Image 1 (cartoon, rainbow, N blue to C red):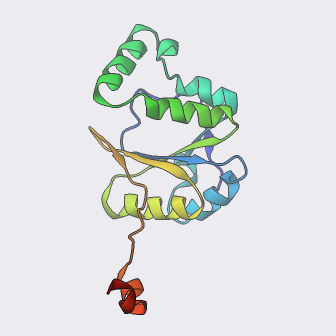
Image 2 (image 1 turned 180 degrees about the vertical axis):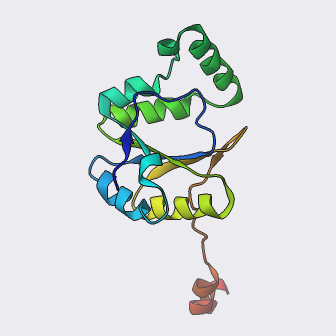
Length: 151
C-alpha cells in the first residue's frame, strides 16, 4: 500500500485516525492496513519535512493558523502536538487514515497497535479520542493457583 506524502495538514484532521509509526515500521504497517483502507487516502508525514508540515505553532498558516493553534491549546493539550513533532524529528512517521468512527475505528486501532504503532488518536467531528487498545489485567487464575497464599 502506498500512502501519499502530505505537504501540510489542516488545522483539525476530522474523521481521521492518527498513529505514530517507527522509522522501520511504515511499510509493514501500510501493508497491514491495505485490506481496510483505500491506498490513496492514507497520508504520511516523515522526518524534518513532516515536522515542518505539522506546524505546531501554526505560523506557516499565518494569523488564522496561529489562532487555530491557540484555540486548540485551550481545548486540547499542546503536549500531544509536541510529542508528534519530536517523533517526526527522530525520523519516525505520522500516519493519518480516514475513519468515521464505530467499528471501523476500532478495527484500525487494533491493526495499527498490532504493528507497533502508538499514540493512536481519533479525530472525531468535534473531539479528540485516545483509541489505544487497552489490555485488561486478569487476576482470577492467579487466585486459583495460589489459594493458600491468601490465608
